[in-house]
Length: 92
Image (cartoon, rainbow, N blue to C red):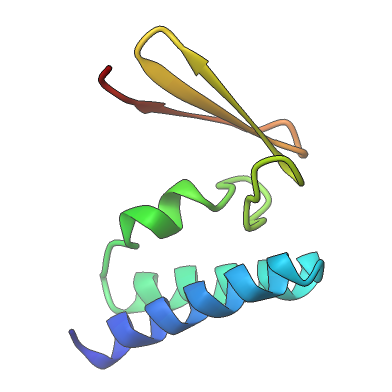
């Protein structure tokens, strides 16, 4: 993995830790920084990072705290506190 990929992974860990500590603003800062690093280096964000961040408000999503997770027919619906929905397929 190159330097940018390692930095994105580190920012993901920092965002998770900040969200766990209840510091939503710092977690949002880390998410925005990681997205900017990925854009500048033309990298795709890791799947775990994409699934746990809101595309609209850049919040790091923690189910039960600032995100609601529901299972529907063949997909998972994640709703952020800002009202944004994300849908991901799954198989039984």
